[in-house]
Length: 176
Image: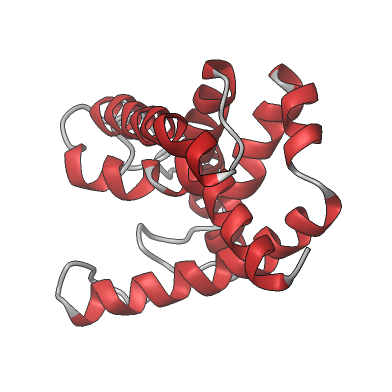
């Protein structure tokens, strides 16, 4: 398998996990998941940026992308997704982001503050963890070691590139 094929396959498999975070930002707002509560350290559990609406719509958008991919997967010779895998990839990406936000608050980092590497790979580890727990066979069949390496290298590069573009377009407040 050549590197271009590995990159295409990595993006294809991760697309249902890549979509939920921007979709949550786009469609989010409303009641925060932590209901405004703080822990004993005085910091919010997650912060205002993590909302029920963002969690729900981000997950649904990731699943919708995966269902659309399923419509064309056989014609393109690419893997299809079982519905539980789509849920695990989509919800897991947002769960990884929630965990990152929790720890950023514990470190006293404000919303939007940079936490290199963690900011770029939270969605990967969250989605993969749920897949390993709930759709292990599907995950191990599709995410071969070389795909895992490509995703771990490619995701931070994609994340940083998209954030810089979003910053220059005025959509993001920080370029990270």
